[in-house]
Amino acid sequence: MSEFGFAETLRLERVRLRIAQGTLAVRLGVAQQTLCAWEAGRRAPAEHNAASWAAALGVEIPAAVLVALRPKVAACGTPSGYQRHRRRNEKYCAACRAANTASMRRYRAVVSGV
Ligand SMILES: [Zn+2]
Image 1: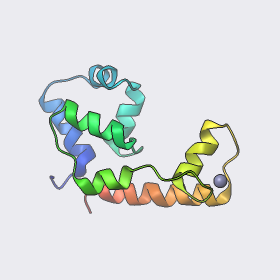
Image 2 (image 1 turned 90 degrees about the vertical axis):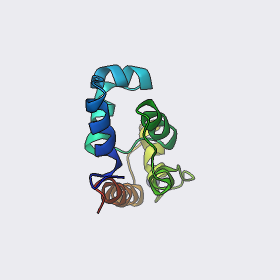
Image 3 (image 1 turned 90 degrees about the horizontal axis):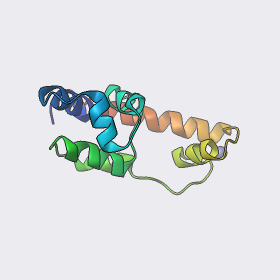
Image 4 (image 1 turned 60 degrees about the vertical axis):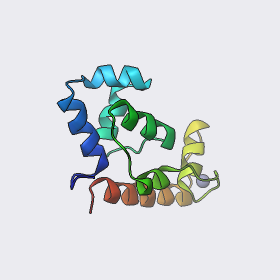
C-alpha cells in the first residue's frame, strides 16, 4: 500500500482509470456523497463495501484494514452500538458516542497510513 493509505490509493486508482465518482458510486450501490466521504477518509465503509469498492478498482485491501472495519456486536459503548442508535433514531448515549469517536480516530490513522 502506498504512503497515502488505502482510501487515497482507491481514489487515485479511480482517477487513473478515468471512472467518474458518480459512476463508481452507482456501480457500488451507494450515494456519491458516501463514496466521496470514503475517499476523503471522513467515513469508514462497512467491511463488505470496502471489499467491493477495492475489487471494482482491482486493488487489494490490506487485511489490517478489513479487520479494522469488521462489525462488532451491537452493545452500548461500541461503534456498532452507535450505529444501532442511529438506525433506530435514538439519542446517542455518551458511551456509544465516545466509542464511535475513538473508532473513527483509529480508522483515520490507518487510512492516512501513519
Ligand atoms: Zn449506547
